[in-house]
Image (cartoon, rainbow, N blue to C red; front, side, top):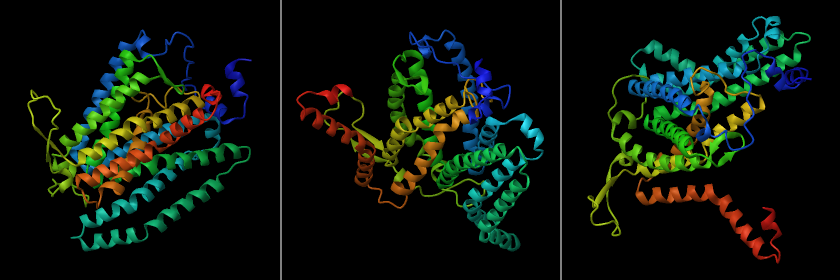
Length: 430
């Protein structure tokens, strides 16, 4: 029996995915020998690099232009990305025959999408809207009423969708419909629960959106080129082309970029000032001590020929180093998760909307993980804190210890067990 027939005859979820559309790209198995699946050994790598580079240039250019336009336009970009991601994920296991038997059923996905958007952003943006329209009494009362009953309105809309789903249940289609219902809720949870933190970061100051997003971009580019020219040691089986050389090189470059970018971004009020309303005017504020440069004398071991005896560092640069650590060590696991997901469903990419990169979801996997951490870190360690350098360094040490405590525990137990046995069987088995 052929591979396609064996999959189609199965009643499992991947089988539904395989038969959903004719344009699904099947992931080819990586070569087993010679390490020929690495980019360093790929004969077409320069052509692929050119396509990927050109796509990256126009994406980065559009991103910079959107940041220049301001908070509302960045939020609109996030909503557009959410829409495109949801569309890619909704289409993963569509079955054309079943959809033809269920006219209008696909609209239910987008109904829940709009309801989730109203629930996610309604309460968050409503207060900013109230601050914007305080001069118009009638509009102010309308918005205040929506703010007051926003939770009830969203719940009513969801219940209406739930009833819609139950009413449209059709005999011999129950399994497909319930799978679609569960799949829709999982997508909405993954997309909105994480990207809502992105919007929160934007209105706290574009700095807290731009820096984490830029670090992921730098890490991705650095990992690609370090692996492109020198990658030979496989990093993880989920992504055969990922190498330790790319991972370590990206780690170093990302940390340095975080320290330097924080100093550059911190000089612009447009990036550091929070937005309290939904206007698009220019911002002016006191950025606070976080963004005020401080002079530090260089240590004595610095060579005498070095041209500077003092350097200027903003306190926020130390926080940027923590963001850089997360972006280079933890955030890539969002990409590994996406790689495992695609392998589970026999996909090469989530889509083909970006030449050389795949789909929007392929680009946003690490960004989603980073946005959540950036928001939680800002709320926990930056906002309403004593911003002395000693407190910042203590917070960095605490976060470093918490992040590496499992590693310290493992090393301690490893050596303790190894030294307590006459024959190091446990050591050899590891």
